[in-house]
Amino acid sequence: MFTGIIKRLAPVTAVRPGRSGARIAVDLGGLAAGTSRGDSVAVNGACLTVAEKKGTVCEFDAVAETLARTTLGALRAGDKVNVEPPLRVGDQLGGHFVLGHVDGVGSISGIVRAAGSAEVSIAVDPALSAEMVQKGSVAVDGVSLTLVRVGPQDFTCALIPTTLEETTLGLRKPGDRVNVETDILAKLVAKLLGKTTGSPGVTLDKLRDAGFA
Image (tube, rainbow, N blue to C red; front, side, top):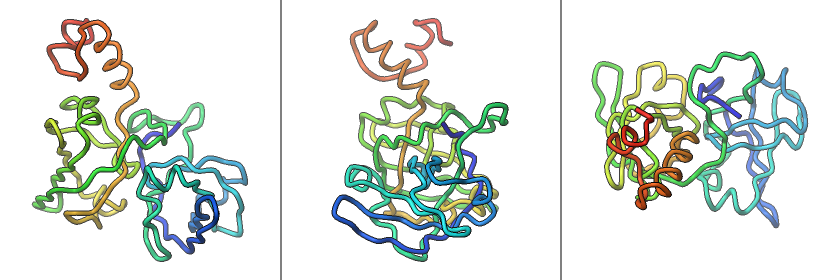
């Protein structure tokens, strides 16, 4: 379990393809001190397990399924990734509940920058946008963001200067692919509403009718 509050913008030091996936090495810097072999770490929003630790560098095995369903398969040495250690009991929940289970890959369709901030639009499969609601939460490359607008096949989020400076989102440009995880609470509500109303998707009217708003 994670929160979407990135703790380090970390460099990838090596990517070694294998028969069943790839081993990805990431320099965790100071985060490595509290990380051991077998621990979970979110890398660009995907929950990975530490397979080996060498100093501040931790190595992760990404299986073929992970590489196919996320952007991790495109990583190369020198790339930067968002890193977050797992939420511990008693830690502050600054973002929202993020599982580290990427639901799909989106494509940045537009970025509007102004006064150090930015508004980014991301095209996604309609099945993903159906699990989003305006002012709700979404994780993009592991970063907890608030949804400004939700369309049938895309969504928009506002990025503050800190997010642009301390995560990979400040490096992204139109056409780049990003990992997307919808809010687990939205998933549960969407499933419930689909059963009770006979149609999928989350809207404010449906939330009110079901007593959630």
